Length: 69
Image 1 (cartoon, one colour):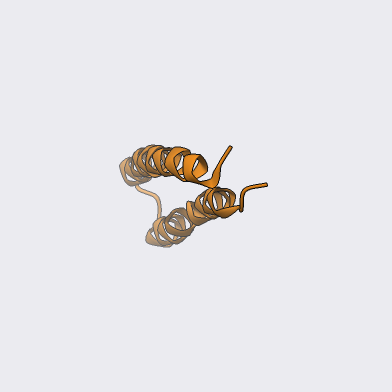
Image 2 (cartoon, rainbow, N blue to C red):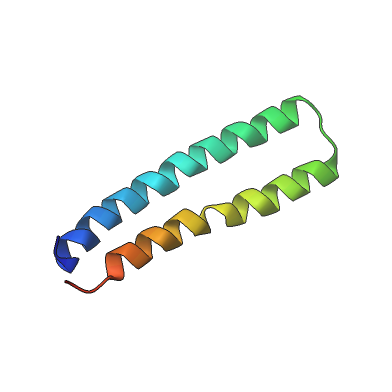
């Protein structure tokens, strides 16, 4: 697959990943609020959830940037 095609596929996948991740993160946050967990637990969740999406996005971007073989 050429780098140009990988960038197109990767862009679409990145948009889908971020959308799905955001929906899942919000759903978990709502559950945490409904169950009245402590503020500390919520804070830890928001920090982890806010940074966790970077790993798969980084791997995807690295794959997109690979030079053609």
